Amino acid sequence: MVMHFPAAGFIGKQAESITNAVRNAQDLDLSSLATKADLRAAIQGLKAEMEALRAATKADIETSRLSTKADIDGLRLSTKADIAEVKSEVFRLLLAQTALIIGAVVGLMKLIRH
Image (cartoon, rainbow, N blue to C red; front, side, top):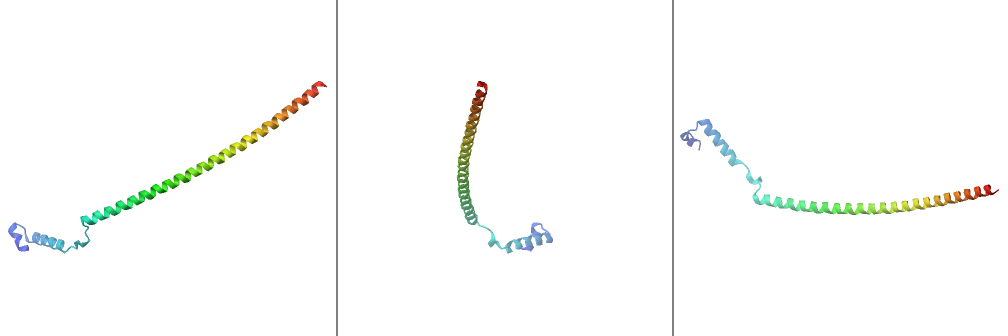
């Protein structure tokens, strides 16, 4: 093969280099290269994995949403109970204050009559 290169205008070193490059290329182990079918199969596997992750993420989001809703509902009930308790306490204090004012007015009226 090297002998055909000088006729084409290549010098000895160029011919040897080209011949070595071709020989090295022929010696390569091509069995580890992926075929189009290998790539298609890998892509399908990745698509399936992405779909599974999407479904799992969607389920996680729904679980979080329901948990958050339950937490908010619990806080809402707790807040309503706290408001009712405060209203009851305010009403009790207003009644006590009203009774105190009525008592003070009655006492002043007794003092003024005498």
